[in-house]
Length: 404
Image (cartoon, rainbow, N blue to C red):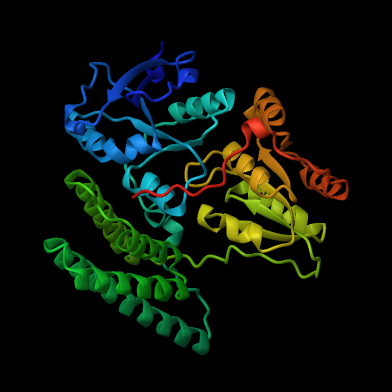
């Protein structure tokens, strides 16, 4: 087996085996009992991926991650959930445990293996760098010609951003105080309230990415209650990283971004929902609007149900993974939960014929390949939209999974 094929499988005693992994990867199963995670015996070989079910990660994930760091082990983590995870579970997995892939039971072996192979093929990022630091375009550049009114507006916004930066520093100080006495509920509430206020303030000033940092801090303080010393260590590391990232972002000019709700000027009752944010999604949006379709875009998994339940969704097109949930899992969930809408997986040609055939065989979900006539294919499908139901054997349970 190649180096990229080494997987550690954390499995609790008596749990059903994940046999689909053994056929394609060199899997070393590690038994997880009721004993402390420190008692888990790590094998000598270094893995590229650690796979575990959600319940197992809840019990030993923080401790395993800390031990990996102490041992110099760099491995990605994949989680298998028994049902569609709740917002809290997704936040816990992606932010606290840095999970790179989330799969849902019942697992579709061919698609799951393809997702794991794609994950293992990705290069390990050298460092987590803010989007603003990656782009020189975020630095403020004053236009050569600006009217007095425009200059006054710019100066007012700059002044408000300076005030917001001062409030951000205040949040750092309050978090440090709360860390010294994490049992003080008054201090926790004060930090949570300030983070909530900053979320709205920064967003209204066009500082969307920094606003998301504030939102994540608020979510941590509101919903995550560390249950162990290891989980507490990861909790405070996450908060510190979010604050540091916010400091870096506020040193630059955060590019104002458009709202994720995009409406065409027509009055069509039904509309197309595009899920994801990449160049494929943007190009398809332009084509559909050119054909006078109402289009909305969602790039946050937490908003998915709200958009689908809003009514009028004739078609949902999944353009990219969200929150480390691969496209096929999002497609499966949408088809099971919202059978009234046509569901498409929009992919690049390189994603392969096998992927398309498996998606159709398993779920009856159509795959649209990147092409000049993709929008036309959607339009035709909407005109002749068949009534399809997900196969019961492969359907996803619609049940939120909570963390604690």
